[in-house]
Image (cartoon, rainbow, N blue to C red; front, side, top):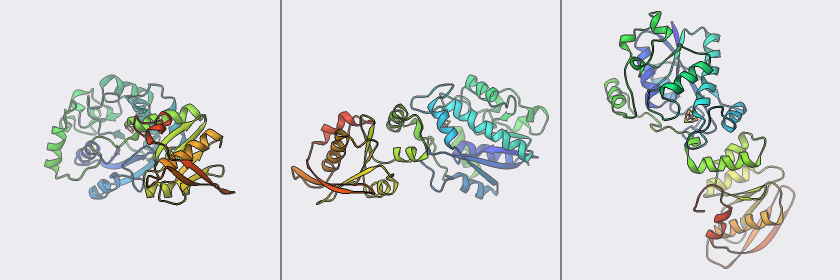
Length: 331
Ligand code: SF4
């Protein structure tokens, strides 16, 4: 018998996979990658390592442009940030259901713990998620099953309900104790690695959605880089270090302008959108404000793929940029 386990690589899903595997079920691990995951490097986070250690097959799905629509207009709303947790779970489970049917798996399971996450892991939310993903009675939650109605897999005797657990609430102690029992170490993202729950990132995303009808993965990638300022419909992104400067140089599009102090070290600044006078001034001032030294005037190189020019800018105090900053009280 085959089952699909959603495996983020965090502790809970790792424990759930281990628990079901120990019942003699063949587990196919499924991992969703997301442009909003801050722990993903190489696209698969810790899940690949967990699957390797347990000798499991791992299938990876990426949340693409259709997921951006879910984040923009979630039917069940956002959490404290831009996290549409209920819709996000429905999105993943619908795709997993299709995959389950494709490979002939009998059921699927997750590492969810009842009452652990305020938005998506309370009883009512779990019911909505099951109903709207078309998986009523089919999602096994091995860590909390004793608090939940028996699923098809338990009723039909595919798995032994008595071996499922009764974890409940926000404490992590039972999971840590079980991890110790299993000898599981080095699990990733205990508090979740989703940028959509981050207030600063959420502010940048809200600003993006407010000013762009259509967004793509490049826009999301840019949200992860630098300090963001807005001037009308134009956006100014100021790198915070050398790596971000390189990233902005590489990601600059056809119509974008780049700025950088010409005679001293300083960050690269990207101007996206209309190069109106106020936006150009803001971008040049950001380049000057964060350039090395304390000279009252800074020469700033402004270039695009087609042209280059030099601007002489009075170095502003960084606090003067604050009213334009889209994501934090402190620029
Ligand atoms: S925290 Fe992020 S990845 Fe997790 S369910 Fe919520 S939106 Fe989805």
